[in-house]
Length: 136
Image 1 (cartoon, rainbow, N blue to C red):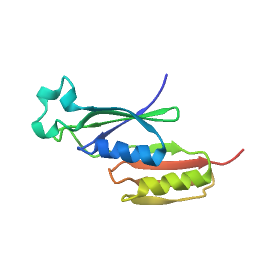
Image 2: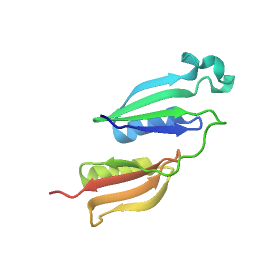
Image 3: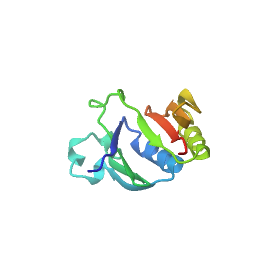
């Protein structure tokens, strides 16, 4: 069994995934537009170049995303995307990168369970927890 996260956007999926590719050092594996799919006829003309499905590979993990039609979209709530990072320096780098033009909810810092932990909402409205566990 493999678990991955599927994020939804209101027309910003491609921009978000290009941003995540830079911040996380991953590789976009899929960026399928509505216009290039069997769903092309069922979406409005202004939505044709929006993203039906995107995948980003980061290490052994897959992040998926889509632009939902405006009538179907609602802002994400009720979850955080948790990113476990090896090393405090890398955790701080990723936190700074993802928080660009976003909002820091909890600055990255040492906690009783982690050498670094912080929470942010990125510029696309996705809430991220950045965690770097303590060395054993």
